[in-house]
Length: 73
Image (cartoon, rainbow, N blue to C red; front, side):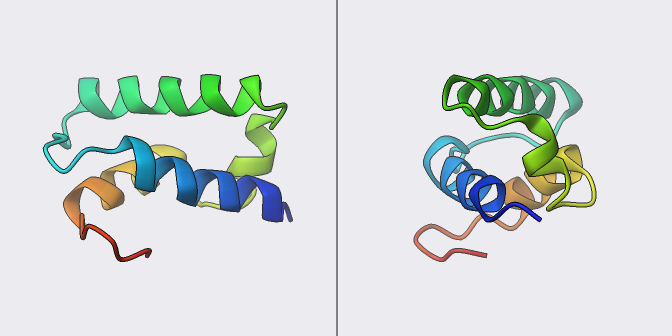
C-alpha cells in the first residue's frame, strides 16, 4: 500500500482534471499519460498508484463525471 501514490493521485486529479474535461476515451487517455509522466518526474512509480485504485482509467472517468470543485472525494 502506498500512501504516497494515493496522495499524489488525489492531488493531481484535483489540480489537473478541469471542470470541462470530457469522459471520452481520448481525453481520459491523455490525462492518464500526463498523470503517469508527472508521477514519474517525482519518482513515483505507476505501481504505487495502481495498487491504490482498481483501475486508473476508471478513477479518472469517475473524477470527471463526479466533478465537484473544492470537495475531495
